[in-house]
Image 1 (tube, rainbow, N blue to C red):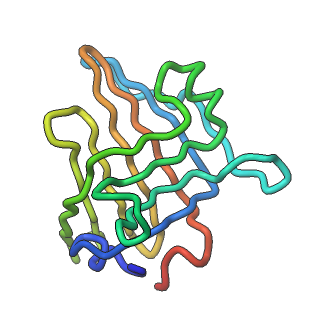
Image 2 (cartoon, helix red, strand yellow):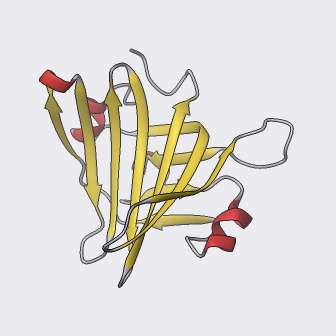
Length: 150
């Protein structure tokens, strides 16, 4: 199981669970606006936000996304419960001058873009979903302790 962004960018399997979710919206030509923010609550009967790339356990060559508190995503018209997307090729890049590492994937032929970022020791995932005249950006942060080893 990948425990670093470099391993993810080189095709390593991973399963990352996050505690915090933010949803942003931007109409082209205007500023990005935070439209919702929430945390995973263990007492609620829901999955945390997750990104999973594990073809060895039968998921196939896809990346699996789970969205916590899906009814809030649906209210905003973002996305439904989960997505199973053909994101099998991840790239890795780094910018040491900014203390930044990125594992990145794009869904071929679509407007779905994912970056898993480590900056200054903190991990985030940015999921960009583009439409005709606007986009949503979903940000996952605060991964569970067992997701990465610093």
